[in-house]
Length: 204
Image (cartoon, rainbow, N blue to C red; front, side, top):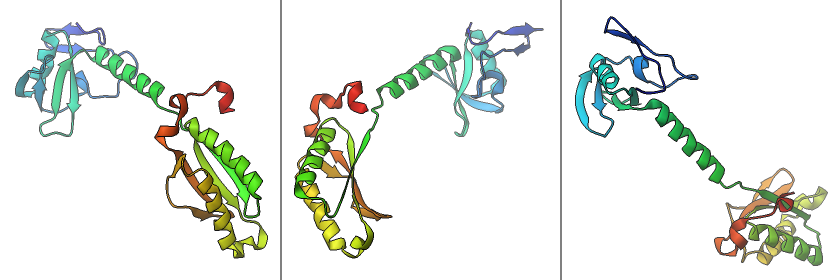
């Protein structure tokens, strides 16, 4: 009998269960459909059956009745060990979350009048970030009347992008956001060093 619930048989007809935790999914007596398409624990089909018969069949097998597709016509229910199903599902979700790669965004800022030496320095820093698998947001801060000299802003901006073009690809076209002319860059896959792994001190 499934460890997920405690069954109490009264007069051979009625049964109750006590769930561990807060069960929100359609399982056992939570299923209110009159008829369901019943699937057995090994994937075998019992066809369309009355919900009472489906519950009785799960009881006979010492397992639970779980509605895997409530929006189907008729709804699809499967006989399984709900406790084991929940455990396996939560385990997979934890592993997926653990393996999900964290995206780190670094920002490089300069102005349209930043000199070539400083641009080279910022470009080298950007390349190091990209090699580690970080995204890089490049922003040109537009000061005062420089808003009237967008040609100069874009020239400096493009000069910088040319310095790192072999290491990056733009996520989308550059855009003007407030006083920043900006673009977000992703690293080219072939330049990421050691799969993008960093030491903790690198993320500071």
